[in-house]
Length: 352
Ligand SMILES: [Fe+2]
Ligand SMILES: [Fe+2]
Image (cartoon, rainbow, N blue to C red):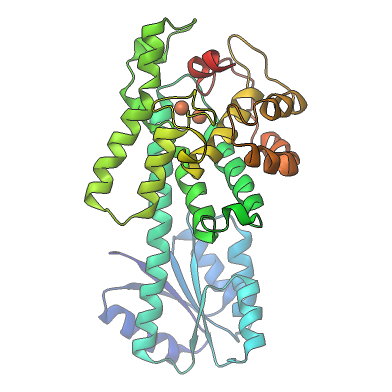
């Protein structure tokens, strides 16, 4: 990462200057602050993706600084490293609780410092990737009628549903922490293929003709093919594989009556079965040209009624256990004004 500016926070000018010299010698830009309060003032004026802070300082110590950083909703993630001679486990736990990401012993070892920096950069890179994925998904949706916070809600529904499946032995092989995270990150890409649907179909106000609907359905294949191109370049990137599966199969149905491939049951990748419920729940809760926004209860009834036909019945059972969280998310990320038409009106028109 170039041009990464690190904020060094320490009341001891000698430590500051040693850190500064080491970091500058390895291509990092630096700025300095003499305690937590000074650091916060500098961070208000400038963005520092990585903060290295001493633990014990006057005015505001390193722990309080970490807490303050986490409290403020900054633009991007701020990776914080605490410099500490407090090596005892309980101190580290305190540090982690306050929001520190990593620790460096004091006096610091140059190689260790650089390793810790590299680890921090890896985390920040992942965040950049997540932001980019989301931006692409938003771009694809921006051509549609106002879809508002559909993506924000869908990724949260999907995460809750996946978390609920963690304890289920039937999914133990597939679901772990990484899977949950990947579902959250990649679910916003489910309709990315809509970029390839002509305006005349995508923005068509009324009911679609058979041919138009066929074209509309092709958003699954268009999205998947585009992601296949990315997979060819990075075959090992798990999130691309999951994004592909979600884009292609989120309109498949458990009984085989979905599209584009008519897959049945567990042949439909799990991530796509999860997103199907999240996506449909959100569409049900949203107002459409042809239907009002359904209540949470009515939406639950519809989803439960489709267990085994549209949806994987075990996922519907999990949905029933966490349905209240769905309602909470719907409320928290509700639209400022109810706009007619949002996500996928043309697709769902044919479904419900
Ligand atoms: Fe879709
Ligand atoms: Fe959607």
